[in-house]
Image 1 (cartoon, rainbow, N blue to C red):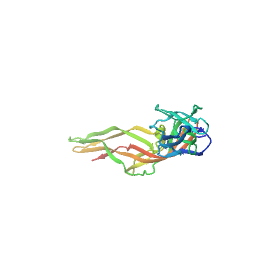
Image 2: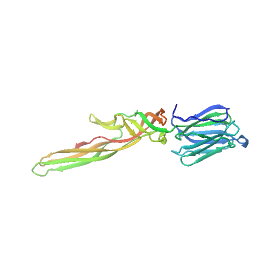
Image 3: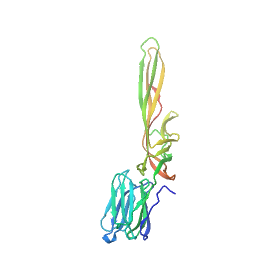
Image 4: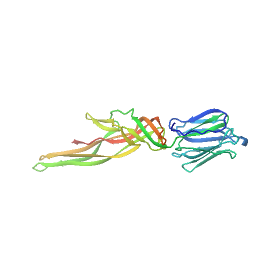
Length: 314
């Protein structure tokens, strides 16, 4: 059992085996078809597939100009697929599919022979396989089964250290008072300020087009250690791939100001911003039939965080 649908090979029995896939979690982006030069061939001579990682693989021997080409848009998947032999049981003959964007692809010959409806699972087309020589003898499409969830786990940030990079002081409010009277007066400096916090994880292989995934890991936070501010990874929690929240920064200071004295206070926080931090982890793909598979992932983290509040006296 695996996360892949069973591949049904359609066509004859000659040729040598072939299999095409991109790097982990890549999808087929473009398919190109060359048919036989003469109508008597009634077959697909050559197939070329381009994956989202720009891997290109071609099988069979092309003759003449390219006959058909189809490029998928982002988040466009196959929802219906049919394959045929060429009509005499010796070669692969025809491809027809419809996409989630309502587009159609139809090429090849079948002489009215049996149509084989292919289970496309989740619609995520990740490869082809079959046999070929100078022609495509057999061919089948490989799909991911319907997905129940995706989760990024074992998250680490290899280059993150306790450093002030991307951290800067931000003034939240100021308070000034002069006591011109002859008696002591009370002062009170208090407020709450809301700051937006955001965390986003992305992958270099573009698995985001498969669907949303959750993240199990820590996040870079701005912390103060021995009067110095820097980055530190928090304890592990669960997050959505893009997580937005609000952090309330509050302070409440008071005291007594003697005659002829003055006070000048500033409420500060430290804003930390990481526009592109390398992240590594494992992407676990789970399908609706209970199967799962893990793939190592390299990606980027983008986030904004704030420290607590400190009151500075001028």
